Image (cartoon, rainbow, N blue to C red; front, top):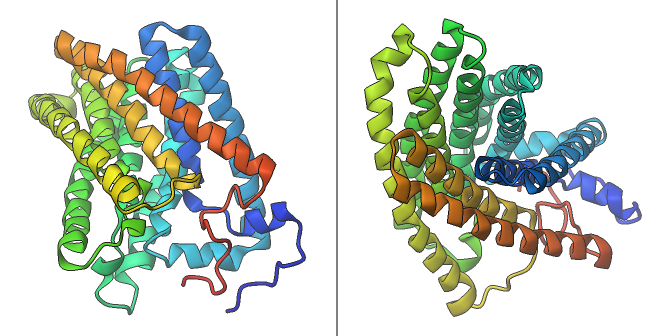
Length: 360
């Protein structure tokens, strides 16, 4: 099916047609920085980032609904594209990050709604996306299309675990414990699977500098949110499910934090190789928010793990790192605003404009 002719359409309409499924990473980034600042006691700044995340969430929900109604064929094409399909999981993660932040304010009704919405969508996408984008494709080898966005599935799973654990503090329900442990376990297994596929892609096929894009940072962010969810599970009350896994989760959370820490220099070095040595222009694109979320989540993971396991050095690393995430957020936000004001397709996931054929 040919792409609808939008050459004469308003810029906003063209932008909605090409809207990246992964744009909710903006909400994830804003929300997790708000969480980090709240953990530090910086309430005013935390509320500012929370408000920004909520506004972004509402706007993106409206634009996504518009796209589903007006450009449904393009959205379906995204579900069949391994490079874009996993971006739909950012809706789940964005919803749950805001839900977890609401829980910190005591707004547990909002947290419960976020868990209900995010949990249902997570469950549906967990079957739809891998089938439509990977297993159901005739093109082989599919591993050639593996990329950093695949780790967003992990982030979504751990966000469900995190919100379920958050609610368990006020609702002593065994069902929440089961859901938290189930989602955490699914996240760990899917991380291992995604890491295998992406590693095979990197080792078996040439990787152009342009292809090593920001979503590869999610490989670290996925580990960091696994640590945060794990730390919250460890602190849950006694239930048969939690008691059976508490020691394992506590130990693995430390291992995962260490691995996330090890990954940071690797990712910075890859960025230098891409932009410094191979001269790929550094310009605004929506996927840059996929860098901000991991930076913020690493700060939260460090603070959460440090406080849960009495590791003051780890906690102090997180308290300092949150400012790195804030500076990065400001730089990317400035780029986004410039893109909105000066021109270009600010909300498109395709830097060079909409595709001519869906799914290509």
